[in-house]
Image 1 (cartoon, helix red, strand yellow):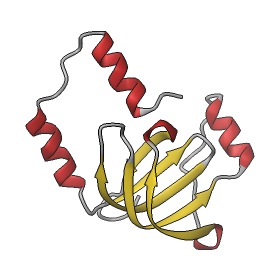
Image 2: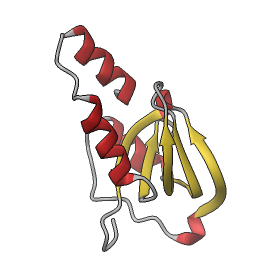
Image 3: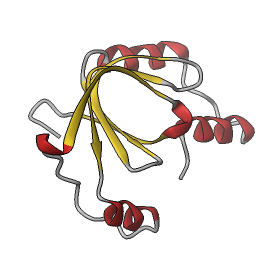
Image 4: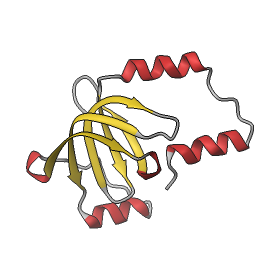
Length: 117
């Protein structure tokens, strides 16, 4: 699966125009402090408040919890047999607090809607 950095590299290699800096700033300001769900290569999901990112697409979350997706479901997702959204319950999580999720490990990022995911 591609990371955000891979997609950026492909756009750069294909000479696709990148969005203007003010649009990128506006987007990140709009999600600052909102709840994100970040999926990683090793079938973990981190849910927390978005604080910042950097040029390598590392993402900082505050008040974060780590969830582990069952291995069978993660394997099916990797080969394209996607299931409905994974339901994550509190007893399957652990509190990790303020964390940095490496950009190279990120598979997918979801923004929580105001009424829930």
